[in-house]
Amino acid sequence: MVEERLATGAEHGLFQDAGGGAGRATEPCFGRVRPVCDQVRAAVAFLREHHCEKVTLEVLARRVGLSRSQLAALFAEQIGKTPNAYQRLLRVRHMAELLRETELSVESVCREVGWADPSKAARVFKEATTMTPSEYRRKFAHPLPGPAGRAGHRPEQADRPINQADRLVFRA
Image (cartoon, rainbow, N blue to C red; front, side, top):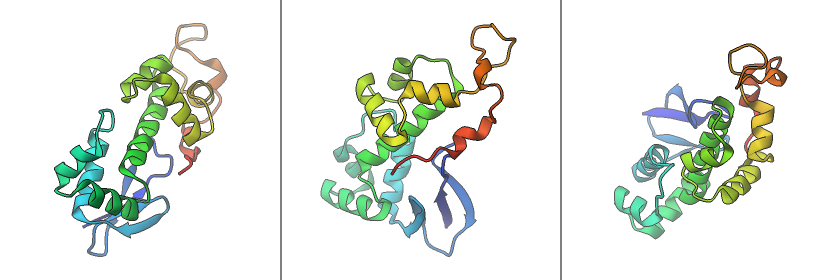
């Protein structure tokens, strides 16, 4: 089996493969690694793949062959968050990536990651990062190539390391 650990602040996905495991499947629990049953592993994979869509607990439970209450209890016990909270975290991480890497409006970024209400998205984002989406973008957006003065060029960001955003710690 593969042992996976939380990629703290990694830009490319929530998890990184840390190499071979000790023969049992594991998932991250925000700094701790715990064994995870196949159903929870499948639920995590489904949420990672479909985090931009509305995924109800009922749909998720049906996909993995458990009742809603069984899945909710196992997921919280093994991952340390409810499936809904986990999906919100995935959306926040995706939102952070889009804010750093694109020039989409904050409203468009919110919709892109699955939130119909930009106000709610901004509130959830701030709870997770301690910054509004606009503050986050100003602090961590990558400068776009091109001479100063061209659209998209952010000269105030030019002297910071590109990986500074990697050190941002999301509150669990």
